[in-house]
Image (cartoon, rainbow, N blue to C red; front, top):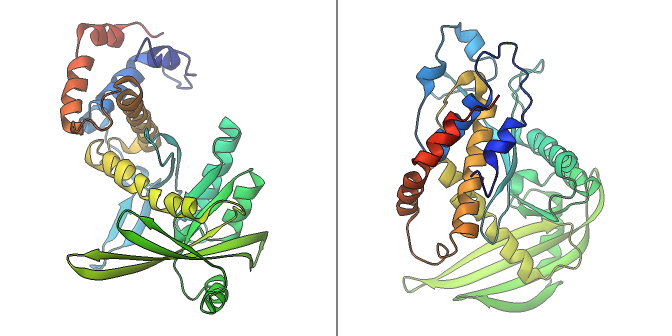
Length: 328
């Protein structure tokens, strides 16, 4: 952490905007970051203080449960590298609670804001954004293009005009491409460009995949559709991109929820800060596993075993020195 990633040094460079600075910022941030990297579940009592319920819930989103009770929660949009490991979190954006319209902020709004903030912070941070069907939206596609990005987005809703226009052509076998195999799956492809979406000045490409394979001796099939702004990308590459989107579910959200306790509210007054620290801890571990521990990929060693080794290495005299080091 100190010699390779220089985490302590970077924490010392943080601007301390607190009014009360009796405890150096370093002595707060560094232990909390290590706490989260070690995947401990709760330090809620450290920050506990009596306060009104309305104040505690002011930044929460809310929804009605089927029982009629109101449920309060936090939610964020995450951008993560998919494909080849390590799967690093590039950024996250918390969704805001109800405004004057009486509605909580939606995922699309948070997603657009996150794209703009990542562009502002990092410049050209990616080439292609792969997203679920929710993001098949003209304003979101426009934001991508305005920030020098291309999009590969799932298409599911059969009621969408772009779906119906493409399906009508595909049924006539227009855009039919050569089939390809992925493992034991045979995949048929229809691929056409030049489609339009209201509010989007860019021409869009629609690709339909018909996947067929045997499962438990039975013939199985599935259709997958996508819309993309990429004009020249090979349809086999696009298929791979869309399937790799599950990396964020399996390797991202699963890890964050299961091992980093991201669903746990550590401190209501610092939800975004804690989640950002969780993301940093997640990234450091991913980089450690796939960049420093070169034998991890393909070794068959479980993350739980690696976690024990990681904890043993962190809980040493050197780390105690880092924690006790004067940060300000």
